[in-house]
Amino acid sequence: MHAQISPSILSADFARLADECARVAGFADWLHVDVMDNHFVPNLTLGQPVVERLVNAVSTPIDAHLMIANPDRWAPGYAEVGCRSVTFHVEAAADPRSVARNIRAAGARAGMALKPRTQIDDYADLLPELDMILIMTVEPGFGGQQFMADMMPKVTRTRELLKGRPDLDVWIQVDGGVSDSTIEQCADAGANVFVAGSAVYNAVDPADACNRLRAVADAAMRSWSA
Ligand code: DX5
Ligand code: ZN
Image 1 (tube, protein in one colour):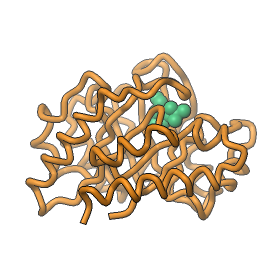
Image 2 (cartoon, rainbow, N blue to C red):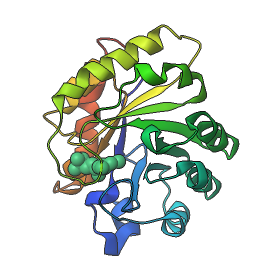
Image 3 (tube, helix red, strand yellow):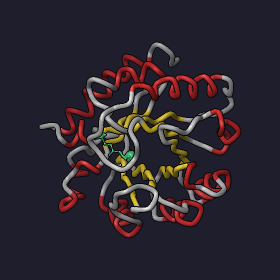
């Protein structure tokens, strides 16, 4: 298993989105797009029409992170417009199992995100419906916040649950405060997909930042990955 880097465009220049995405093309495995609705989180970013345009304007696959109320209603649409991965928050979903099924049916990988106070064990029965678990390492809503190292036991616990289900192939993503100085502990704990916003887009060379992050993560993942 190799480390995958998903730069969050939340820290990019929104007036030049396609250009900003192009700066990491060929270096990023995914482009992480943070959709916020000012209800589930106290911030507002962009919605499905802009995401659809981005899908068509960039070559890197889009990893949509929906921080929105009622994903039951809205999440499958992001798959329908071409996002290759669509992640919803379990705290916002009325029926997480059908959200995941509907995302998959619309052709995308289904991800389920957990806020810092949400425990994975409460949702272990949903793992077969999922392609990715997103463990938030900040409270969702804003870029540039401080990394919560106390989320690492949750990452380790999720990896442990997955080791008991070799029939499944579920990725573990971390998001929030991931940087040169924090990515190693995430990879060590069992994450394999790494979202980095400010660490990539505030860097002088975002492409180079992706490579550096991936190299550190790949080395640390060797402790548990075959
Ligand atoms: C926070 C978002 C993150 C954010 C990460 O709610 O989900 O994706 O952009 O930004 P950094 O890496 O700066 O913490
Ligand atoms: Zn995010």
